[in-house]
Length: 145
Image (cartoon, rainbow, N blue to C red; front, side, top):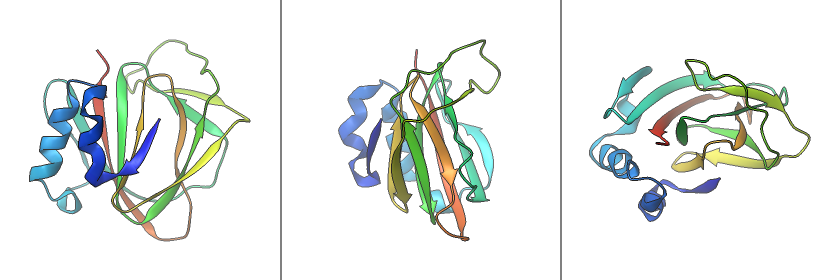
């Protein structure tokens, strides 16, 4: 897991050869103008732009195998719980999402202009309520292969 300011994303470009596609997209796009949508950037990278109210913590963690998440808050703020537990991996689904619970958690507060990167297998519980304000977030999904 990596947690930092968006202006520092370039420092992590060696994590994946496809991070440069995300960085280039961010540099030429006003993320606040993105519609709520899922859209391909390349054949190895896509984004999912979302708007929602934060949810209560249900202790349900997700992890992924096929994709690295780069979660960027554009408006508002949310908590993301991160766990160092090893996920239970089963069959993949179309969303590449595996759900489990964990008693181990680190609480991150993701605010406007910050990002969190979750590598394959890293447990995270995003979208948790800080207040009653709307959250706008872009999740970049980067192929792990």
